[in-house]
Structure formats: structure tokens, C-alpha cells
Image 1 (cartoon, rainbow, N blue to C red):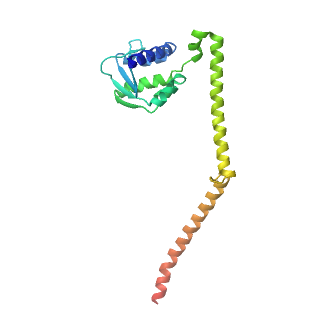
Image 2: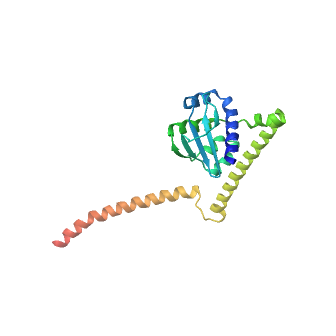
Image 3: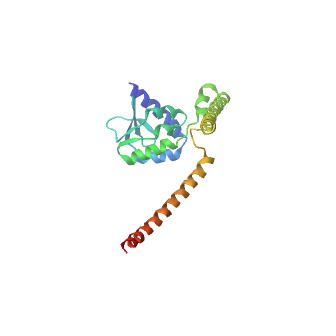
Length: 199
């Protein structure tokens, strides 16, 4: 029951995207009749390719089974490619390659989907607000990471900063070169020392 609902939802979602992308339907059309089961742990989606290069709910034995990381599925609403990373493929690998390539390259327009329910202007504002919030969250995470690294380098020297690392590695390389030269000199002296003791 859940698998059937998930399959219908995924088919409807991707068919809306495919309707806007003729290149994608042209890529899928040669694989008409092929089916794919996409297994995401608790939910499994069964897809079939139609003659028009669109998707339909699949039946029977799948041509290919694609295992997906369930954690990646959560990000697929804003980025369909997120759900199609780190895959495990069993079956028709050529069809799986075409299907995943097409699905990864499709880009949703969340504003267009929202506009159907709330209108164009509010949908654009919501998408801009969400995108800005996500960008700010990424920036904040990067700032926290930089500040944490700076703290560990300068305040509590548990890490070595880049400005200290570069001279350290240069000194270490010079020490290795000197040690290598010393080993060569000792090796050169050893046979001479041995022959001197015999005389």
C-alpha cells in the first residue's frame, strides 16, 4: 500500500519535470517497457518507462533494482539528484545508468509547484525565503567551523595552523635530506674504515 502510494507520487512528480524537458523523454523513450525498482529501505518505488519516454507505475519483475540511501531521499524534494547518489545496482546496468542520469539532471521548480496552490507572487517569495535561509544556514555552519578551527589553532593549540605547518614541513624535509646525506657519508666511510684496520 505504501509502496504503491510512493510509486504513484514519484511518477507524478517526475512526469511534471519530464513534461518540461524534451531531452529527458527522448533519452528514456528507447527504454520503453523497461522497469526499475528503487529500494529506499522502508519504501520501494516501482517505475516503468512508457513509449513516450514518461514514467508509469511498474509491475512484474523489474529490469533493474536500484538501492538508494534512505537518508538521501529526504533532500530529494529540493534536489532530485540527492536521492540518486551512492546507488547499488542489480540487473540492467545500461538502463539504470540512463534512468539515473535523467533523474539527476532534472531540476524542479518549487515556485511553480507552490504557485498552483497559493499563486505566483507568494510562491516566489516563499522559495526566495527558503533559499536565503538555507544559504544563511550554510554560511553560519562554515563560520562556526572556521571559528572552531581558529580556536583550536590559536587559543587552545591542539591543531597546527597552515602558517605554522608550511615551515614545519620544510624543516622536516631539510632534516630528512641532511639525514640521508649523513647516511651516505657513513656508508662511504665504512668500507674505507674496514680496509684501514686490515693493514
